[in-house]
Amino acid sequence: MIIILFSIVSCEKNNNYDGEVTFYTNAQALLNCGAFDIYVYVDGEKVGTLSLPLASETDPQPNCGDPLTLTIKKKKGDYSYSAEGECGYENLAWEGDFQIMKDSCTRIFLDITEIF
Image (cartoon, rainbow, N blue to C red):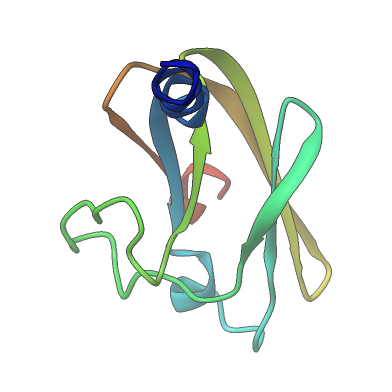
């Protein structure tokens, strides 16, 4: 009986992540400055890097986990994000807020056209 109860509690603890957020960009595709990375932060903590862009603005929204995205799992709640990169002498920066809901995939497009 104790083993069954422990298994149930363990399964509940493994579900600490309610949803996902996926970041993607068009920056490297639209800027002519060679290869560069976009560094992504959630609540001030670096969560990863985008090294490759989506091909263009007209691509459909990617699925969470798409290889051209940065996807992380988060608990349900409200978060802030920032992202930064450098292209030649241009400093690139985005920031905003997002919400994670249960069993959801939140998509955040870091659109280079919003900067210029």
